[in-house]
Length: 379
Ligand SMILES: [Mg+2]
Image 1 (cartoon, rainbow, N blue to C red):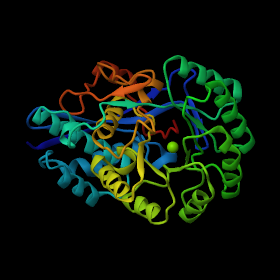
Image 2: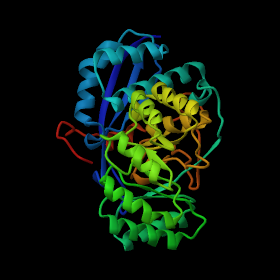
Image 3: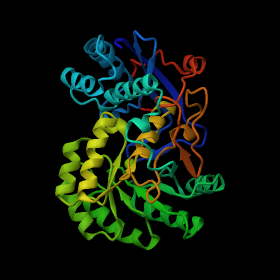
Image 4: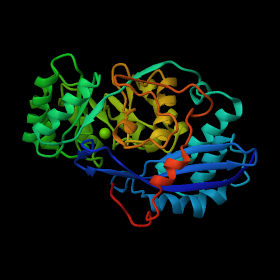
């Protein structure tokens, strides 16, 4: 089999009314992403999705499309798509960084391999360890009435775990978490995610105040530029610490582990440049005795499917203790698939048909196609 073309299709899919998120990175109201189709001379097409966000990885749908059309397509055309390692190495040679763009191409290669073998991707990764993957719904850093309305909606729909965005104003953060804990009662696990928003001193004081609310973990309390401060914070915190923005590369993960800076690593294919790179990080975590949880950039259907296959096949990704962010499609007006994924709440089920197990709805794709992708949107 040979790759004949890699097609990059910019889309812009809004979040549902009332389901936008708000973090210390800003408001996420619409998703200017890129759908990838890897075409082959066999007629099989591999599907990928780049959940690019400039404030997250520096990539935009315009930069992703340019990288695919200007560099990656030329580099991979003529290669056997089943040689995923070789294709990944070739991508690394033609363009640095750009993890979400590379991950989109790489997940399309896994999709092709699965379709070629008539096996789901999780089986190609060693088989399923977890058949059912609990999810957690995310509540933006909104004022208390709006945050409580979301908590009520999510729990009413069957959600058994919540993540609350903090990292804005420490006092308002504490009040938001207190209100949600009081509403949810003691049996709903709650974590918080500061998205780098607190200073070291704010983080230290705020985490101490949050200890009374029985939190599962605090995610990315401070900025990424000081892993030694993250280690110091972890040392002083009675709540487990998770790294998300600090953990993009294998080198990042190794550094955090060596410094004893984290209890849990947030992982997902987009952030690490693909499934293979994520497996390197989960292997490091397993060697260090650190658990992993699946994070998210609010993917559509294809990106979420890649996360489900990975989460299903890795024992060290503990979605039972730390429910995963297999949630993007629940927030968007459409997932771009002909058949939606089974995401619950309270739990997602990994698709078991060939490849990623999803089919792109081309009519819906046309509806959300973004002809103005060269204009940078912050989502
Ligand atoms: Mg996060």
